[in-house]
Length: 391
Image 1: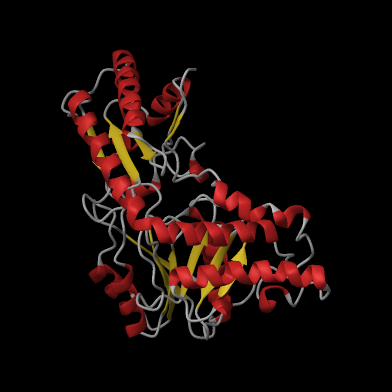
Image 2: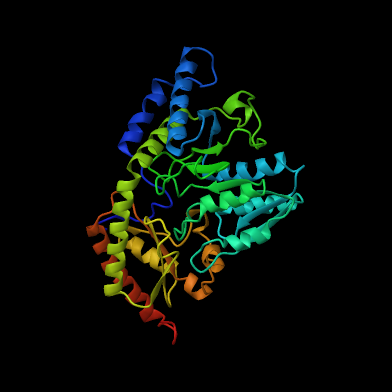
């Protein structure tokens, strides 16, 4: 294997040198328990507070105490859904989400259904957008929460978050958004966008794995889902603070937000170059997701007549890393629930491959990927020719 190219950045990213430098002292110099009252503990808590303030600034939260550290995006989503549902069950037991949410949201909702809550899973159009009229129609007197992701992790479609939040608050309903793929990709201002709860994760933006955060607007009722130390995260989230990871997360968010305009210009250039080369050298495919309202770092393509898993494996042999869906469901051979909800036929959905670009992806990388992709597709279609009419 002469060359390795990583195009699975929507799954995870490398830890940047700046982030790693921020983390290192927390392993063997500032190593106290942030909950301890002595000087070592106070030093560790100062690191946690600095990271919390960085994230507060990055998303324009009113106060730093609205940021709660978690183990990552899944816990943040679970906590937002389950915590709000349990804390507000006296007002109602109806929640609205969409059919294309991350499984962290969907499976939390499935759990609530077992507990007697009712969930409405909104359909999306062919581009992956929630229809605001459908949302309005789904609202009931007992609706307590609407949860719609900001950027879809498989196709990159950006939802109309601000409009959805406005609708929710017009009916006195809380609004949560899974922004795991959004922070650093689009501008996030929780005050301007009127967001009540927002989930984020570190390892999507060159921070360490195993740490994330949940923004909870002051005044929102939310129950804890972890139980232990009563003083950790202001009594809302038990568990010893992962100080090195939190330090890295805070730095990663600060850098990502600072550079997001520059990075997005680069992603757009790379994405357009990729599509230009794809059109030149490959036939019988379709691009999935919204044509304009999208994250330029994600490109989802279905190749007709072949399976995405086969493309992934053969590209891997050439040193190219891609995915067929979310990394959390990548070992499943079932068609993507996102593409199915968008009305993509199962055989077309089975041929989907997600290319997600990083800050270090170059045009030279794209040239190599396209050349290898042409070989892979030719090999697979020689084995299984395209069905007549599927063009």
